[in-house]
Image (cartoon, rainbow, N blue to C red; front, side, top):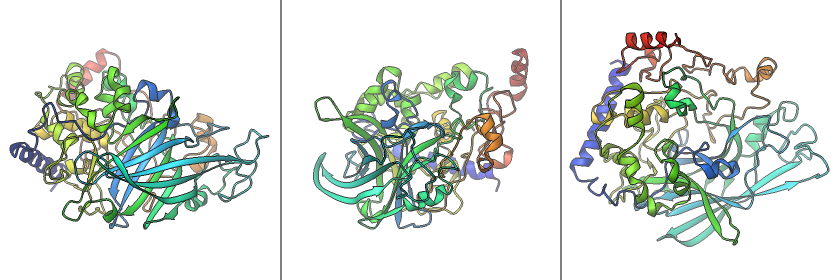
Length: 515
């Protein structure tokens, strides 16, 4: 069986699950009440006006997956601070002090949090009379030459009906891995990262520190959908940028309701003190891209600040999404008929028989079925390619959520077969096999001179316009045969033009002087 055939079998399988949910009335409540409780789905790299001006509180992505090397545990990862330029000193990128970095768990499907893991950070400076982040080479986390240090506490809050029932401290004064200043300052950064991986109470493992940004995509989608003529695709815009990561690996039994009800919902929030001394939620995140490309400008800040039980305000943006209309206007791809109950199933309730808990209250959240074991050969298209351990069943680092969501938005689950994608299929750096799984952060600079001199960065990617290792990028901003419409089969050399016609496309580009 070919890879394409396997992909189509996976699509048919998921489509059948969705149709089954519709037929069984599982989405009958998808009208005025469909989005009431739950959490936001957004990959917030500058996705809303207010939070784009406050990057330290901006959580960029959330991941939840059954740990591949410890399948009796679940790994939760949340990232903060988008677009960290590696050379961004002298202050680099500390976690926000005096704020609450939270990961929420809904273990019964009612859209309300049952568990909440809360990180709070504390910063210390040894010598305030120097501008330096470190005053010499740093060999360990307690090295006196590491001038600016951070530690964190983790609290586990148990909730019922949105009220705290109990609070338990599971980690106290744990060191944060510092920003990766460079080879002279931190000659063995991996050693520093390894020292920051700590055991916490309750049988868990925790990490907080800088990492390579694991999200891979071409953000030039915002230039009228890849330049309006497919000339801007295939480059991982986040290659070479870092982010701040918190990661927690806990026994799965601590998260789920029971073996009979193994599905959990996961999202993250950031809260900071307001002028009155109370807490204000300023960022909110579950799954990728919704606040960026689904929620309109007028409601983006409201979306970030709102609580799950108010999500009904945003329902029309899911059932009547803007993106398919843009694809039709720009690329003549017919928009599926509305209302989009197929997207309600994928984004709000979970897919029946896979990620939909019993008696679910529809809401946007990253849903994970913890009873599905990890696979040794994950497929980047996850459930769409028959890999039920991947997105939208949770989210692994390797899941190509951009391609998955583009294909779903264009009606893949309704029988509208397509291979939409941004031609960026893998991260620019290989992920790890053990906790915390994220790749080490880039050091130095993303500039052209740094590319020639920083030999240790050669195995990552040619930064700032170069080719991402293992991806289908063309390595420049100029035209190439790498298109927005990319094959779901890795063996197909990454490019198929679906729905447009290659001859028509080339003729159009020649008339425009692009090719």
